[in-house]
Length: 282
Image (cartoon, rainbow, N blue to C red; front, side, top):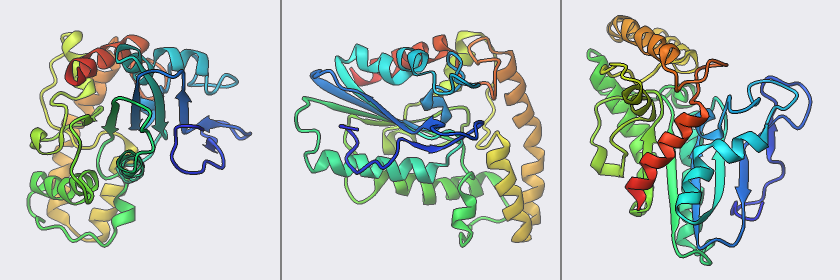
């Protein structure tokens, strides 16, 4: 890898639904001496899961389809840029933000000095996937689930974004299929989520806030709440399961969500997202 600022022993760190190597890559790049550079960081949505035949073997990575269809390369084309994708399917915001801080430091240190502009986009995943890494967390609010979520988001997401240096204007952050009430301007957040954009395009009404949607986020949350004996928070969360189910049902109905796997965006869904980001960056 020429664009990743640290040593990469293997671009294939996990096997996903295959038991043989190389499995899925977590970093990819296109270097063609373009004027600018686009770096996108995220989870399976950024990775391009379900594009082409990437949802199944043997064409597990299906780089031909993914590299031509995922939003990283589409955005780079619009911005006359080389590109690097850093994404791990099923990962948490902790991993995503650790990668962001690596890139942010590299930019600050001049690692990408050959480029006129370096555009960074970080597409965050649902909160609570990383809750097991923060078992020590002592919430400020134990009787209001919405405030509990905002406290968690502030503690483990916003602080992870800010780090120790100012956030450059060309660094933008977004949410994929989850959402919550946040101050978008405070950390260069894209106002609309990716999924909301797809709902708007297909005229599906879904205006509820759901900070967590999949079992990867729900399971550690419920386990943690029970271990801490936070019964009121657990009760209030259980009331949100109706909204979560509605979100999942709407994703299944949306033609811009792939019918394979866990309803990742289609190629057209990636194009729509790339167009949206381009108008923000330009």
